Image (cartoon, rainbow, N blue to C red; front, top):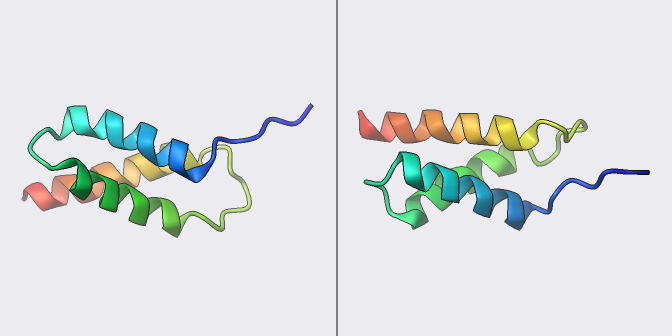
Length: 68
C-alpha cells in the first residue's frame, strides 16, 4: 500500500491556515506568497515525507524576518 502525500494546493492551504493564526498581522495573501515560495523551493525534493514540515518552518522564518 502506497501513501500518497497531499497535493500542493492542499498542503499550502493547510500551512497558510496555521500560520495565519500565528501571524495575524499579515494578510492571508502575504502568508500564501511566502508559503508558496517556500514550497516551490522544495518541490523537486526526492523524499517527500517531511516537505510540509520543512515548508512551514522556512515560511515561519521568513515571516519573522518580515516583522523585524
